[in-house]
Length: 314
DNA sequence: AATCGCGTCAACCGCCCGCTC
DNA sequence: AGAGCGGGCGGTTGACGCGAT
Image (tube, rainbow, N blue to C red):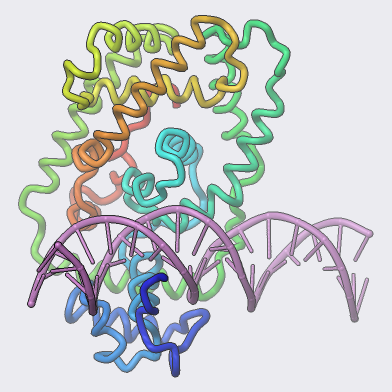
């Protein structure tokens, strides 16, 4: 038996939110801050359940949210992480700070799943050289082009008139938050993180996908899981992501011994990664509240996408 | 012009987890 | 220790819009 509903359903309004309701909710959050959702309906008089209020805020009204028009860069990150983490949309969203888990989930279900399927079926399953890194690199290049050139991007005219009014509310909130005290150290911490990531990426950039894979496998063999205490470094994580991308595209096609080794290596790494998942996400992605503040930081504004650097394959 | 089919996405539902008492 | 509660998450639904017929 599941837990009872979060609220008495009698007299609770459902369905799309009106601009008036949004304004009430935003005004309340301006005054009290997000949280304590249980008290929101009673305090505001909104005929909505607390969950509905929280969802509306986190998915639509929260300042800094980017909607629609996923870039190939973002698509790459989503495909990358979905293959690695599965349908952990919240975890994936933590790598795309301006996107909500709901948005990513929807985009995956309506666009990327199909696109990936189409791409995979376009790969020749009879190619005997399919397990070679050359083939995998080709696949990745092809997919990159495929993604970039695909005509399935969201049409700008799909934005509803109400969406723009939501945007206006967000802008109002941004102004409000700009007048709030600036974070004292978040920008520094984030830039330090970025610098570390860039260093690791610069190294990887000098390698082909092939040597990244073989280097990782070598280091993986040299450092068994028990020695590392089940934890993996940031560099290893980057390598896993690289390997995983190779794996993701060519998984069904791997038939040689080398591919089997690569595959096994990845599976072991992925299971190690799974253990360290929470830590890694926490390390590379600061808490959302910090990100939000950083987004609204004058110096940080407009650089949000740079927070998450993509692995060299993308 | 009317109808149908499909794609999109906002919102809901039910379960889970962690915190508090 | 365990019950209750709030919040978070992933899966699903259904309204809506648009193009095809």
